[in-house]
Image (cartoon, rainbow, N blue to C red; front, side, top):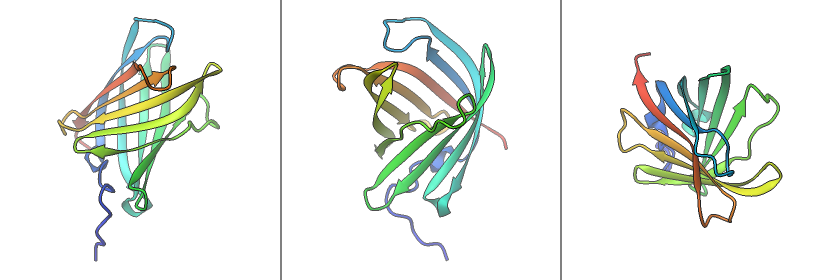
Length: 162
């Protein structure tokens, strides 16, 4: 028998399966840079933790070479918050500080305090699932406590056959 999940636990179900990803990434962060690099990638996402989490396995095809990474997500039914960690094969023992947040309708906002080049910053992930055939993700950093934000990475997901 299926036990119903708490409200919010199915927020990332839209991402289960396989996607092609078009990436657009700012070449330098919080430095006034206006140059972007575009590249392609792929991911496959599946549920874990009995449905209260998921893992997104990524291949990123940067101009300088391919690398692998995972996004690990878990849902806390008590707080109603998701936590998202990033683990990158280029630094295999460095798990990023998790961003935490939730969806309000089709838009999910997730935040963390982090450090970039010795400077305290805020990190924001924005998930947009208004178009389930092409969900979108953005990462932005703030060096002024969240007053202003610089978007530095955007992804457009396109579902592909398994």
